[in-house]
Length: 270
Image (cartoon, one colour):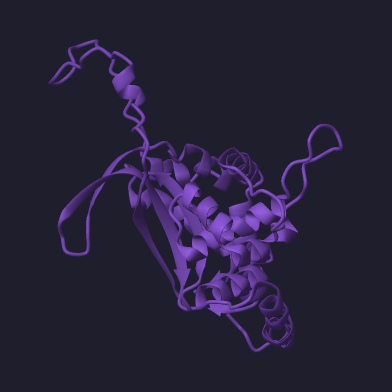
């Protein structure tokens, strides 16, 4: 990213010389991980993409901006579960103030985080925030190369049964068809259909359920996992440009054309 612009330099100056001293007076000592959370929250500005859903009727919900900051802190600190995040917020007074939660009140529960996560997924918050940052910092830059690859995402879910296994289909006859017998036409390949489809149509056909997948790792050994697969385009500078989540059993080639169209909408690459 181009970090030599005047507004970016001023933002760093404000974080170091104005925000950090105030937080030191309020919460005390800041560890390197807490400072990393502060810098990430200031650069991402995720609260600008969150809207309150309360219409004045019933009990007011927890502030969604605070919960979104907690999700960012969870990723920065490497917390695996929601329970671990709640425990960290309960015990760590400084982290609660950094995320915006008041110290004198009780913190959010697991159900509150689950409802907020469902709302963030519906409004595509994890996609809109990186997309805005990429267009702002790399939209006018010329990217040399994009590296495209997929990685395994294990999940603690039960694999979904395929439609072919659920439906009882009659066994196909082996060999050539008899005279006068009509055979159903072979299905076209997904890559051939993608050449005639738009981006929303391609994304609609990509499977997203949890299932079993297998691939060869960097050492040449075959590994299997239960969960999903993350496909990503990365620029030369190491910044992720586009990402796509699919079932673990989907081949990487089916994500190539959608990722190329998504990356072309964000940046200009060679």
